[in-house]
Length: 402
Image (cartoon, rainbow, N blue to C red; front, side, top):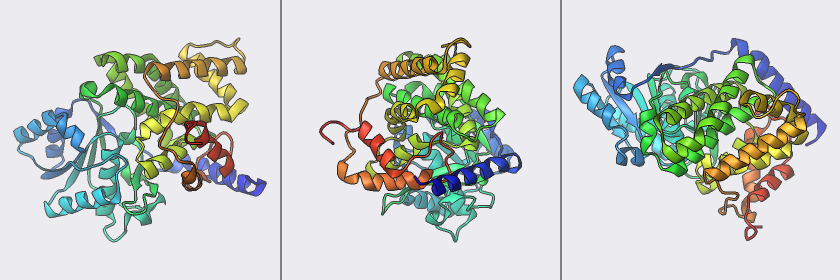
């Protein structure tokens, strides 16, 4: 990347950071029991909710306690349960049509990031009915209040219940893009660890590392604040202490802690942004439908190691906060300790080292998408050109793919 491109990116990022104190960020109000959602909707004077979910949520009956509470409260609802991983504009438009045709007046999203992103996109289209989702790509393109949105995460990973972002994939081109605006922050978030107990171990592992990626990229980037650093560190510590236990035993305390870790990480990256791990992962989700948490998990260690010494001092602070090191530990030693802990955690929870779907012929397309997403918005520790991004994909390709 040439010096003028770097100068423009850093100037843009500094300007965005300077605006943080005056931007209308807010945290959703927390609900601790999924069965309280219908009571909240009734209190708010709403008559019919559109519940947005994916088929697995319904199959696992994760929404049943809430649906029973809807019946007890006498509140009507419509159910859209066709959300796919990496939701597309097709599902968003189908759900929007149901919202309008059934006379709904509020949104309830239950599931992983895909369901929550789909519901946010529906809200955006309700607020701006004459504007297609493709025209909302980027930042501050909605600027109108969306319907009441209650977000119920069923994975401890995305943090989407607290962010201003919806990530959508174009149904025709497979271009995956983010819509970022403050009205998309849900009004309420349900943090009920009991919902996570039926999740498969591989979902717990991938989404847990997704949350860790959010926290690490927010902390290691160059647009942090006192609040985002605090939230990031709390999330990182909780994840190192609880993810392996949640993966192995699904104990109530570990799942609750992971859900709160994901929430802290979401609060952090919604203000301080993410980095190249996410940009590279989003491109894979768009092209191959690679689960987002898995893509992040595989890319996380290679990308952070490639940043080199620029992040060692911050890694030392992380290690001290987590109890892995002390003040006498050098930054280089702390970095080695951190990567030993990270790589050990990923091995213990079954994270693979490679993504076999990546094809050499697709690398230019993937890199273009990743570069466009990251530049100039993401305040990454080191600015990379497209060749460097391509090398990161090659790091996680199998020998047969190269």
